Length: 151
Image 1 (cartoon, helix red, strand yellow):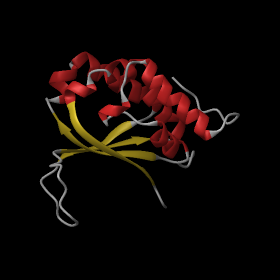
Image 2 (tube, one colour):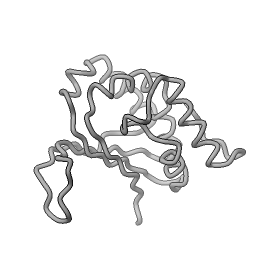
Image 3 (spheres, one colour):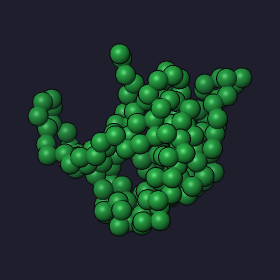
Image 4 (cartoon, rainbow, N blue to C red):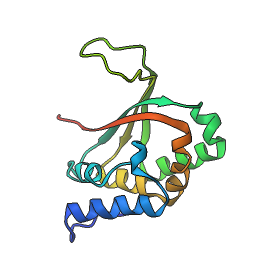
């Protein structure tokens, strides 16, 4: 797991995180792995307070069936260790406002982290990186936004 390092710049940390994923054999060209610029956006988020990843998905297969129960247990164990949790899961039924998109989103998820450090540790846990290798065969499309509370 990676710990945030205030002695090096945010851009360098972001490049290092992107390189970590590349060394793990994960390809950002898939559109489901963060780019260095996206890591930098994350790292510039507030370091204190809860932070959420809000994701829309189009899956190619059932996530639990595809990943397996053992992977799910590992994922939940990382959550317990870091204090993160799945806040909300749901099914997308269509667009209510705004312009139509070419993508027909199917699933929606909010994942809560106690702080930025926990999110970075989650995303860089070696067990998660191993599971991420299955993502291209599971996830057709994904969009994830970084959200913090304004209270």
